[in-house]
Image (tube, rainbow, N blue to C red):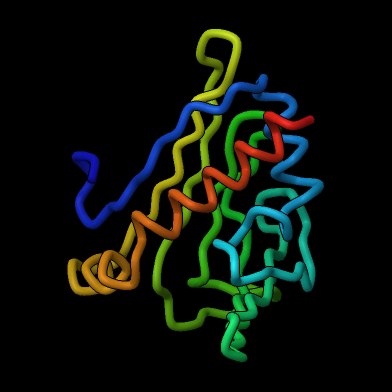
Length: 150
């Protein structure tokens, strides 16, 4: 956890340039967005601030989690910030977190950092207990594998 209150974060070096990692992030999101054996489908996505970011995650035991949200910020090649606090049409909804996904050049590769900021300590602890570190680390590994194989 960083010095930010109610934040969980993971970081991973990816042996591929930021431009390629960004391309994988934006063009192949269903292939890395949730840890296997879960899978993700993009329902609607607009890679811009205020753009819709709707996905559905499917679990191995028939679980279905619909996630409706928006992008708060998109800086191509560098980062995106999303939240489930607002859905398309500027409708507020019960919020769980703000996700911040950042890329930074590091040597010949990329430092990928993914953070989740929560409204409360309870939400943060719930996310930790849900397997934040394991799940988000697996997702980072999946992203790295795609980028490093390209």
